[in-house]
Length: 491
Image (tube, rainbow, N blue to C red; front, side, top):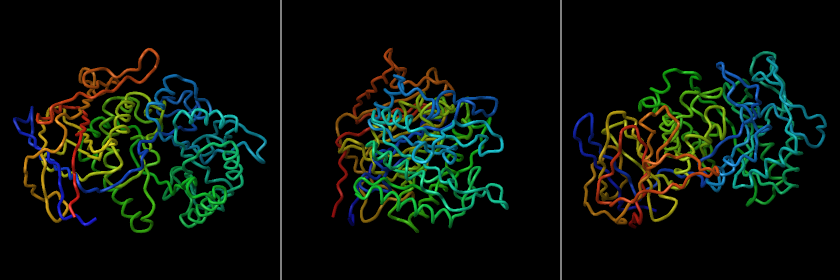
């Protein structure tokens, strides 16, 4: 639609002093969209790592791998149900060493330590009995993306160490898919290989060969799922974004807006490539945890990780990425099922698929992202305050612009008519006692810990008169939902 007028939302913050309140002007366009996510944007992974997986003098996985995870844990089941649904991606580093125990595969061994093999482990087998158990678990409102082994049939190059050559052999994947269909299991999408594009991570496949083989996979999916309405999506290629694995300064970096902004160029580059070569497709972040090999044990399970994680969700959606998969659901240090459960759950419940443009030039420590809310007509805004010293008092106003979209250099003319409910909903998230390296999250002052029956605690907003300022404390995260927000598109 060609908009002749645009209604936007502006946020004005009054400045008092450097140690208390700073002046920030944020404009959120309520009538134009800059991106759209999948309905199930928030995603988590389940990995194949066995108990013996160790790095940096720690062995964080325990019994959290796909083959040994206790799928009857009450807390685990309740967390999955609370999202209703939660996209779960089955895969990870070892997925290109997994064979499926079906069809012609008679011997089904476990992963074994082998320093000469990829990632230090031998090829392992996924028995169909375990696939049956996993699908009972997924039926608790999980939405499944399955990572396929894309190295089957290939061999290591004699010339380049990490390059794998030869055609992909599809028979084992075919047998696995046919078994899955015969049991009535639902797979939303198949990912072809784990981080095999470019230089790869431990292994790579040349682009031309990978392209030929993903066409083979796509044709296989079409053959086995002829109805386009129920046909699983095919995902690939999976790339690799480098982060230092065990960085002692990571706690400082994730509070540095210039560091967080660096990944924006990656998101922007991916979006440009998609728009140029395959605009009808969409980009996913299929695995991200902030660091490699089990992540940062003194950071990834803490409240501070929420700064990085939510900023990544906001940035990925801003650049039109459809899904963001957090590595991992449980254990490995960077598990979602811990400190960040309530943080991610609020995003999942509040932030809708339509992404709104935000401009904010005054203070980079205040990160702001806005979407139409899941419940309409509403908008939901997330504020991430990276500053340990500064707080903000935020006032909301409507702005009107004509003929064009707002850009960061535009000057908005206020009319100060707020069109919305008398009350707004606020969810204030903070660390217990201000310790951002702690694991207890406060929601509106109440600790978010599981109940005695392992249920996720009720997360209710506080209702605040919409005419009063929003108070954003230092080192805090706030979701704000403006109810009955009107953003008409004028023809």
